[in-house]
Image 1 (cartoon, rainbow, N blue to C red):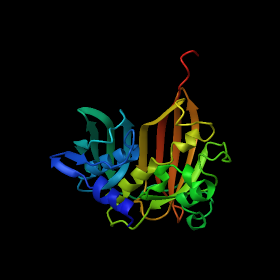
Image 2 (tube, one colour):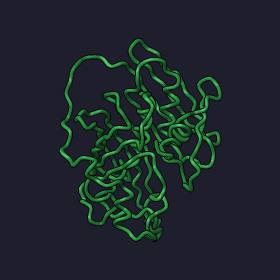
Image 3 (cartoon, rainbow, N blue to C red):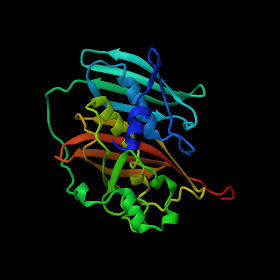
Image 4 (tube, one colour):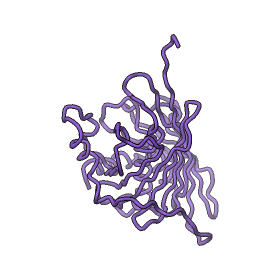
Length: 288
């Protein structure tokens, strides 16, 4: 397990249980303007899962309400809404400075045998044929032009298929594919694997919305943020095995864009589906 993955597992996702149904999550020591949405979602799911004694998570539905403050811990309050015979439901509210910044409703269920079908997995190059993200960036950019974020170790190994999302040579179609996996071996804990996948799911999904557009985040003309994030865990997923992340964006309109994502394992099984809506606000000069 790399140092970055160990920090994710042993610190960010190892929540402190400070009271019944109340957990506290730590923050990484990074220079960020707001908390990474995947971190909040993963910590909230871990908080919910800590109050469940059977079944595995099969879905989560969540809203990002306010930007998180990366300088202070986050409190997670769990509401044990229902413990049914088949399904268990939990509601989680993430709180900072006395205000809700995020809420999630998660459902847990034991698998049952019933109807079976799925989309076929796309035919793509394997992950071992694609260099890691940082290796590609080093080969394409002057070292002085590489953002500090890319120079850090990260817990998720990303292998983009085709051009990188921000490349001028990229396809302008609203589609993106990459292979992802935890950068090391994880303990055999289904909840932990689901939380790591949740963390990783917010790393690239927004890119499929921006693909067709010439957007610069750093020139003050665009404001982007995740608004909501939904996931369905169809099968138990192994976050430390390669997963194909197949994404598309059906529409962007009204300062909101929609993105969908599907995670397939290497055997072709569809394991997780996701939908996210993001804020895509173009900031125009006041004179316009």
